[in-house]
Image 1: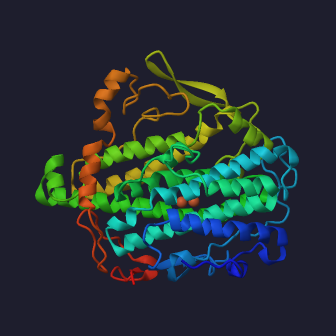
Image 2 (image 1 turned 135 degrees about the vertical axis):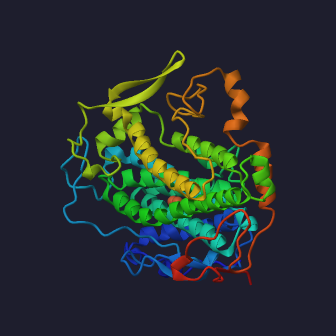
Image 3 (image 1 turned 180 degrees about the vertical axis):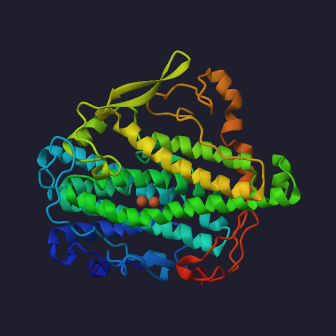
Length: 478
Ligand SMILES: [Fe+2]
Ligand SMILES: [Fe+2]
């Protein structure tokens, strides 16, 4: 393996004047070899010699942020970009509303802010770790290229958070940056911070579900942080959102293409019984529904407790806003407002109003659910067009939750409160079980790498990447 220890600072595309800040340079020079070590260990398996047709950001302007070319992934130029400052930006919410936005970390918020940045940063390498084996079972070169694109950009998002830690948090920040390379997804002793990022992503159906549901949690978290009164964080997150859009595109179109392929086969053969659908070598929609139920519910947990004093603090201090905070027409202080949350009382799910400040996690979760629902509607339109008699649905918000008011309760898909024994009886109707995983993996036993070819279980996309044809050689194996 080859690594650059000396001149890499010049090679990091950036718009933060990296070359001028000696302290920051030294910190990054120390961290970069450790990052590369992590990438070789935990990045996409056996990919180090591949030439991949990747998008690299070399600046934030419209021409610069999406440059396409072949890159050997370990040579990817993980850049550091913040959207340019807007003059006179203020803290837009909370008790500090109206103050000039902070360009340095206010001392009293230091540990809170560091925690927010570390928690976000930890998700980035986690998803790369979760996805590292999937190249061996890709359904096409197009899809292989897309997963690699997602992986290098999650790597860049880690750089983005590490930049903030190094630049603004001194020694504590450097220690946190190292720890970000030491935790491992799913590790019993040193796991990633958040639950969904310790779940395995065993196959491509799970990968597409993950990028649709869980990368979208990323979008909502980044959007809230893009409102932050700490300006460097806001500007960093705003740029990350441009990349996140592609990850969600990969997820939505990936599921859409699987749905399309299955629904076409069902209509063509006039079959709807899951085993007959499976016998055609495509994924039955019932299995897709179970995967959906799983990824949706574990992702809902990422938003945190329905009622949370931490969320109130983040908001009141001006560190983390609401989704599209500055477009909301209210006082942006919320001291007198209420918001509805659900809880379980006896064997009923009831709704009750709580102080809006404490319900900000729930509000963000609701914003997220609305967007997810419209994606599911688009999948259903694909099914409707083929005439297949099936609709994908989102489970009740309380289904299979481990955090917040539903934790420890047993809620059915339809929101019915039930005993653990009854819930267990339905577990593998509602969530993917060993047989589902075995079936999906049987379809994905090998990789499809002939340019222009797609595995039987997925339809081709409508268009290639960057206007390239579908039979373009998106990955060269050498
Ligand atoms: Fe990310
Ligand atoms: Fe992402």
